[in-house]
Length: 396
Image 1 (spheres, rainbow, N blue to C red):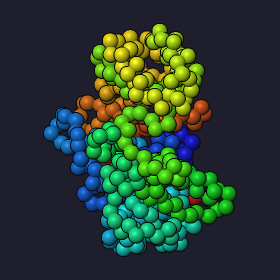
Image 2 (image 1 turned 60 degrees about the horizontal axis):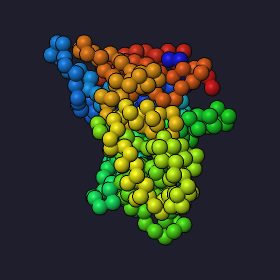
Image 3 (image 1 turned 180 degrees about the horizontal axis):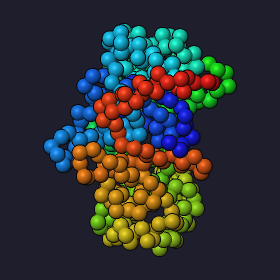
Image 4 (image 1 turned 30 degrees about the vertical axis):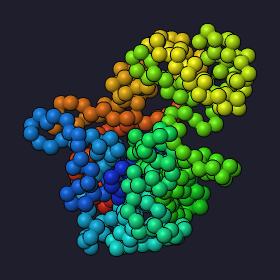
């Protein structure tokens, strides 16, 4: 691997989406991710969709490929003395351990931070939980299980997503998993830097609830400042306008001309310079007060145009974008030019898997989607051999 984390070894005990997404980031940045799986494999190995098989054998599913690319797999039964001992041997040569077990599991398996730090005091130990660990702030929900939709609900995201007169709507991507996973990766990198200075590791706790509340930051200050409870307002913005999704002849577009200069530019493009001098729209505050009139004006302008025509008029001049589905994105040159649609192999199938690329770019130590996801225990023998070799003794 060529990324900036080349040489960093991570023991990955995570499953599902939040934890594997976090270690996926580290893998793309060059870390050696040793994915420790139970006998039978991690649960998402059994989740599709699957590509057509050339020989009738099972292939790697899209879910598993997407967030486990670039990792190596070893099977350990942590419930057995042998598996537990092997894990501690991996920890001895590791820089990082990441886990997202449910409440109380690491204690039952005797792999808590207090246990593994005895083997490797430099170890950075990342924990991703639903509502936090006891040491970082005990919550009444500490023992509750957590999923993307329940966290979106409890941390406020659902309360501001949807139309004014509709039911709460979940944010489309699994943001309740993915954002906490991203925050955990930031925590791991910060602790690694600190460990280089001090020679001491530490534990990191990212609660899914906490991460999502931080993502919903504006509802916190809005309520604190005004005493008003923010509600769903569709595609608009509570304190900026125009900021909306408009219908055109062949689909939908998004426009955000919220500053004075961009509002004036939009008025000229619409061939309505008179709106610039209109007292209702003379500044940002006035425009928010008259958002309904602005929406009517924009609808009257956009509904007779196509996406391509609007793009020609607005592209590069005011913040604008077509509402793309994934087929549109596959056809758009931007995503491939930026290495954001990446082909990887899929054993047993002639059909390549395509996964989302790594958005963090480096000038000297490039990040990249390295290899496909591993087959179950594909690297077990090699990892065991490495761990027995004196070369793996880390001299920090």
